[in-house]
Length: 214
Ligand code: HEM
Image (cartoon, rainbow, N blue to C red; front, side, top):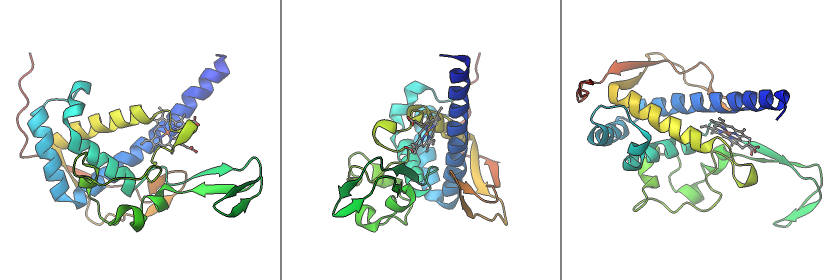
């Protein structure tokens, strides 16, 4: 690669990877502050598996509820809330003629909220992702990272960092929305909270003490 290619790749990774991950943490901590029963269930899983220690890659398969919470947060508040494609040539789709040059917008925000697909999309319910008892999600109904050949190249990394960060933070702290916080959407390239996400992280009293490291 030329220096310019390397520069452009690094810049794209930072631009595409930083804001989306920051969005994920903001909205997930917000959702957990609003759904204490979900946070309590998640904390129980984290404490059973990790007992206060810092999570590692090997712990992640034993944390299915953590995965469900994150999947549901990405359904509920998709950081990338819409994407667009331009038709290179004329084509027919379901009886519609789409001329070349048409821009089609596919919105995660819309599709992730269709009652026909989700039943109760307005409910933040991680249990719908349970591999045994959860919902059947039709192909294409859930695409927080896009789909097809241009699916997010950073998806595995984003899944990994989100799990590790949340498992670490939530064992130690209870996320509480700051009094008077105004939570308003600012849907730009990503789904931002317009006035930020002021949270207080309160020390978690139920924390199992971390084993003394030597
Ligand atoms: C929660 C975190 C993330 C979300 C929700 C997300 C979402 C997306 C979506 C929806 C696309 C497809 C856009 C389209 O098809 O028009 C995409 C593409 C992309 N993402 Fe992510 N992303 C995340 C994290 C990351 C990270 C961590 C990186 C890099 C380290 C990254 C790098 C990229 C790149 C380079 C592309 C373009 C891929 C291509 O066109 O072939 N993303 N992302």
